[in-house]
Image (cartoon, rainbow, N blue to C red):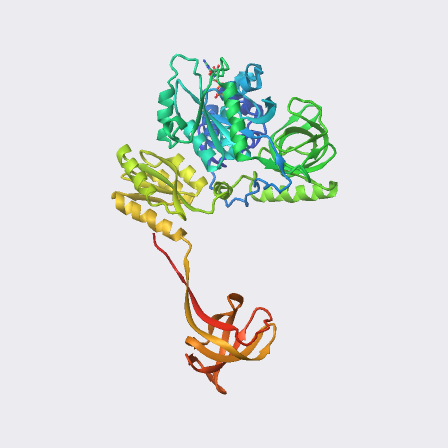
Length: 591
Ligand code: GDP
């Protein structure tokens, strides 16, 4: 490659180290070396995000620059949390730890686990996304061992979806940082419970009040200030506060009543996969439902296995595993990927055919099967019949931001509400648009600019950005959007009534009868109900009216007439039954 000339290579938002090396036409070891120099420990199959790739490629000095590939239509979302049946049993909570780099995620996980793993790892950065279980007060808690810097993006995409509770770690001496906010946003979007762990309380500069203040700016008001955000001060170093944190996790678990079925074939997610010398592909998986056993046939992503060995994450062989248990599986033919769903199937034939189908779908979609944004949205609204309008607001100054947010909150009704998935002071930037894209939100700007590159990004990602200079115009726009979410009202108007005096024909699709109009005016065609005493027997359609032998369109109160009806089922009409004619209209509503 000519190093003086700049060529541009298009890559996806996330790319495996191996693929990137291939695209750059360099040995993968050179790329891994460069990543290591930058503190990123990634194996050939691990995925790095675009920003990391861009920095590394620049450092390599290959005369190559990267550009993001325009996202193609993603495949339908693949992962949904299983719903539990009436026989479901209580299961341990699955907890992830997220937060800004260096705020103590790894140290906290180690303190909880009671083992000093961080020191044993190269460069002190966790290498694999895996999980472990601990016992506290004789109960089990599953922790996803979230990784350091390099996989924050991956956890951001999938981690929150795996979990029931996210612990957001905030170093009390440093306060809330961009990745803290990001972690909070993603946990909120996935609809999981948040516990804030204010870490490094042993340090001199620790300022808990400042953290509380900053949290309130993120709409997280702590319990002692009248909100419902749980905050536990801890120190991963001295282990102070750790028992309280674990108590709180169990309390939240009890409130949430987490359950899963243990019967039936297991399903779950791959949380880590790598190749080990002498063992071949090794996958770590989290069971979500059912029971997984040695010898089971399992399909994950485009790969399958007859489970050779099943181990817990300490490497101890086990025969079976139930929901919320992390397990290590060997026997896969090829390496599954982080975020792949797994399912236990009946036999090898089924395993092979299902994995082939998934592999070809993956190939068609250009690689990884990501959890689509619609899946996130579905999760957000999973317990919620309420229609929500997701929006992001950026304003020029804090004062106007606060008043826009206050006015928007006032628009909420029992049926529709504004959900502010992000807000801030300043221009609309890349992160806002990214968040809007994943959360399907509209971006509103008040007195702010949109740079040409952001405009381009917005149009590429089909994100709607609306900028206003007058508050009430912005509010009116949001109001109009909310109105479109309101279910239309159905209005029925009674037209007239007939009391049946004679029955001439009743089949399963047609009724012909005669009677007297006791109220209003009958018309045809019209909708009608057949009513006996107070009970409605069927909703039917009036297809014709006769006054004497002649067809007519209208009959009035006090007149006798014949009537033909189209019915959905056979009705044994009797004298004295009422036929009530009505019209039905849908009326759009306003707030
Ligand atoms: P991560 O990047 O969020 O995983 O953070 P680490 O766990 O690697 O911690 C970053 C640094 O903060 C390390 O040097 C830790 O020793 C230090 N650290 C973590 N927790 C505490 C704590 O509670 N007290 C003190 N004094 N230092 C801590």
